[in-house]
Image 1 (spheres, rainbow, N blue to C red):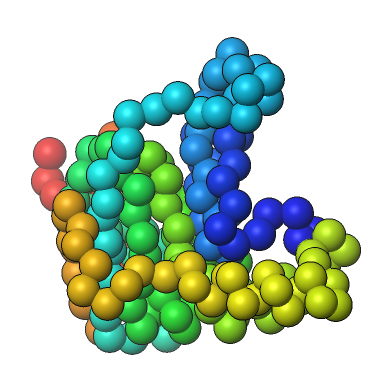
Image 2 (cartoon, helix red, strand yellow):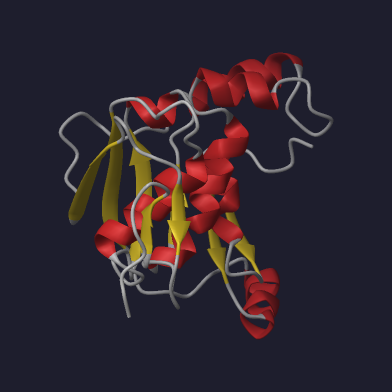
Length: 193
């Protein structure tokens, strides 16, 4: 609808709040008591999260989806690999994803322990938001675009952790065990118990 916009911060009583990171918003899951405090004070009390960059290089295979990329990331770093971090997703694979796939990737951020996750807004984001009922219009749209284009990491930005995944030849992924890090490619073999 255009209610969630790049650069906004949202508190949501749902662990998968970071889905909206797909449009460049920052969202944090919270409990209902905490949400009442946030609504009353407009303040979210939290320890400052660490910064993590996940860069997806190469090209996804023809059948690969954002969920396959997310599962591969989780397989590589584990279900606690992003604990305490806000994750920025970047790289050519991300830039080629439509908004719905970016949302899927950000939605699964919680499965690796991330506090939140987002994709910096770009032309794909702006085209997706344009014309939605609650999106800015006219001169306000022009001002919003000018601001949104600044919402990216500076060249040489420092992160507390960086993960690079080569997506060339990444098969569709499946989970086989008791937690989301038990992942393998569809052509691989499930481990013998």
